[in-house]
Image (cartoon, rainbow, N blue to C red):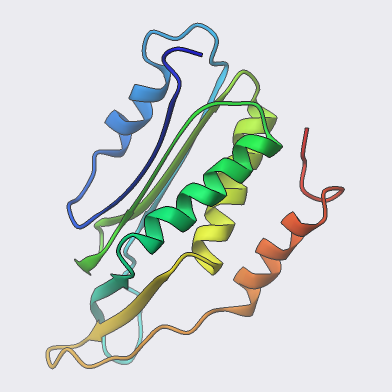
Amino acid sequence: MAGDIFEVRVQAEPFDAPAEAARLSSGRTDVGALVTFTGLCRADAGEAPLTALVLEHYPGMAEEEITRHLEEARRRWPLQGAVIIHRFGRIVPGAPIVMVATASAHRAAAFAAAEFLMDWLKTGAPFWKKEERGAAATGGWVAAKSSDDDAAARWNDPAKAGER
């Protein structure tokens, strides 16, 4: 439909999550549900406090892979729009890292698509995170978590995935 927005952006700059979400529903009377998720850099309580995350990606490949998964979400659920933004570079605690917003006529589709996209971004997107901890900026690469893999695995079984 005219007015539908499907967009993937990989950028270093911060983004305005409320403004991005508003673009999906502004002036639309056919959108009944707008689901948004914004992931923030968290300063966890470790031996040395987290001072920043440094995210690296493979330019071109990251956008292509995220777009491929957005197209998969569009095949699975009746979406009327979606915006996915993932940042790279040095990100300090409290700053936004990622945003997924999905629009649909009904809430079930919007929620399921947003969750599907976030689970994939967490486990399969071509980004690498390195922690900076303490004043000396020591730290290391962040390992994948099996709990994230388990959450993403459910999307391989349509009976569990809440598809249309």
